[in-house]
Image (cartoon, rainbow, N blue to C red; front, side):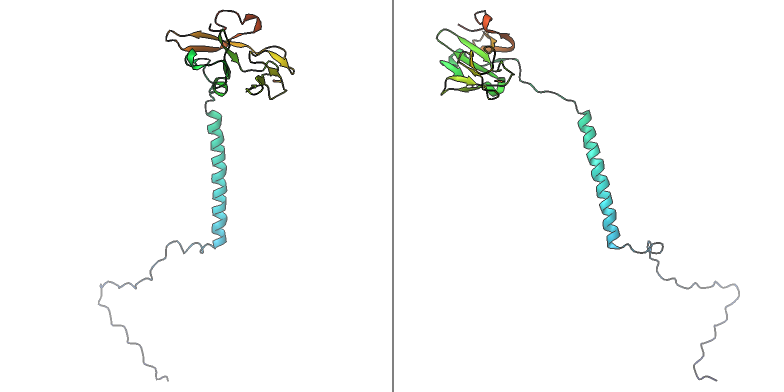
Length: 191
Ligand code: FES
């Protein structure tokens, strides 16, 4: 026989009385079905997402570039270069990079040289110290009138159409060109 105290006998429930429920322990959602992830699993998943996002981004950029309208921005071919009084005697190269021309003045006239080497089309430079145009590609040289005198260029450089607008400004059209034998024609120079 044991001397341990006995548990009190349950009190008899009256017939029809509700059965009291036992309180349940609090539920932890999300932790019952899968074990907690390890840190390396997280970083692997993150890395995969980053890779996928990057790949999709590159593909998207490629598509945008493919469908983007390709517009070639070229300088206008007809434009004003100011007034005749803006130009002194000699070669003025202020428009070389913008319009690929030189505005020149000699004792009788003003004319505009198309800055395209007649060898293979490079843009020569005006060397004022040497008083000549020098092509950086294969060494052709032209005098201040655009006439070739050294290197492989086969002929002088062309001149552009030039005229005076009603307001007195000098207008140039680089699509209308005058080769050497037409330098004396109307619109090849301004007197
Ligand atoms: S392109 Fe000018 S010398 Fe060849």
